[in-house]
Amino acid sequence: MASSSEDRWFEIERRQHLIIGLCPDLPGMGCWNREKHRFEGFEADLARCLTEELLGSPDMAEYSSVPTGEQIRHIWSAVAPGERLPRIVKGELDMVLSQLTINAERLELVDFSDPYLVAYEAVLVPASSSTQSLDDLRGKTVAVAEDTASFHRYSKLHPEINLVITTKESDGIYLLLAGDVDGMANDNVNLEGLLASLPKSDSQRMREIDVASAFDPKPFGVCIKKGNPIFMAKLNRAIATLKQNGVIARLFEASRQF
Image (cartoon, rainbow, N blue to C red; front, side, top):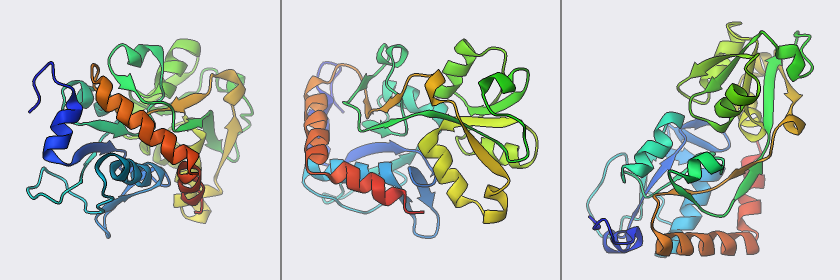
């Protein structure tokens, strides 16, 4: 392991693999495919491309624990929303790609790369609901995942909306289908993927209301532990290269082909 004063990059170079945290339950962004035993989606594909840029190999193997062997380039770890920052701070993960919005509060705890995607707030409601705006949700219940940017924004800016806190990002859509909440708040890209993953009969029971103008945009960054400038510089160069080559745009477009 690296000493407390050593940049994490040198540890990564020595072991020649990255320990990466990904969301396991958001189709199109980060989702664990049980049959194929691999993570899929935009952020999983981006993680592979970043690994190739950083370590020279896009090794596609998936592991749930630290393996042995010199050819290994990836170790994947599923992270729930509430685990993302704590596992980075503890040093359990090298980096997390899991719809983490860059904001001032989080920057006090961790460091972020340059943004790789910008998303926007959105809300799902029953198709039969009369809800058309945030004002219509006053006094109603909205599901939102714990320790997400959406949770903190609604808690601070809209205390008149009653929040039902979920452990996983996808839990809210099932609460909504069951009629246990009046809405579900999340990023537009996440809601789009969740809707597409449902049977048509279920997705048609919901519709999205546009609340983007009521909130700041949500720039997503790769999260790493504070105090690792060499690792951060390499990561930002890798992101810049993938942007300039059009790779990130192509990966995101492919992830939208539901």
